[in-house]
Image (cartoon, rainbow over all chains, first blue to last red; front, side, top):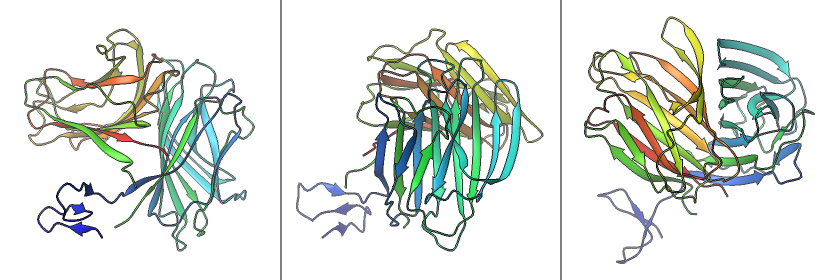
Length: 195
Length: 172
């Protein structure tokens, strides 16, 4: 039985001297996929438990497609309908730009680095809020970027609305035909608990 | 369940140094997150902050092996720029001596996959304050070594009480 100190607020497994404190985790690793040497076109997280408040997807990605930075396509619960809208503000080497699109069949908030520069990868932190709430459309926010030493990098803050009230139980991320994800690409899904 | 998001170390500035250096960063995490709340004592309304990295337990790399892109808004417009072959990654602009007292920048860096020894390292950063700029940026360190030191720096010195906390995130 966990015991909470009224003085410090800390949890311990017991009052016995020598026992370590117990901190209930609020940020937990759900699953991770690292792309191997053979490459991979799609990453899927399935059977996502509904026991968290929010999800966070942390991505480090490169694809063998001849480009600088471009977007991977994310689908929730395998929904291939035109149910995704997208807004982005981003900066490249010269300009600050904002755009928005409706009626997409993917969430395009995950960036990936192409083959323009060896060894460079895109980094993403994607937050999926209230993913299990069946009363709301789902709002996704992504902070991402890749840099190629002045030759076409960009940094973006993007959002997507998935127009569905279904609880998210699977997430698939694909190149959409633009090459394969390359070795050392890394996709990690975390759950964040509410109070 | 073991902790997934852990505090590695915290530094509080005493007002005498332009550097906050985290050395001997363990390789046991998947990603690093650096959370900074700070201002600079240099003259003027604002100045820059930067990041430098090291591998193999050595000194931070001061060669021209970094590059950055950043976008910033001032309240009346937005712009973007890039920095090529620099000796550091550009962080965020931060309040300096002539900005209203008590205004600090809050800036967060994400360094994903920092301990791999195969790829260049990509850093994304986002931050701002109420008096100068709101910004986000991306930087690359063209080095394939595992990161063992993270150094955050500014011009002149960080004001006393500025705080810098490095977190590690473990994937399953």
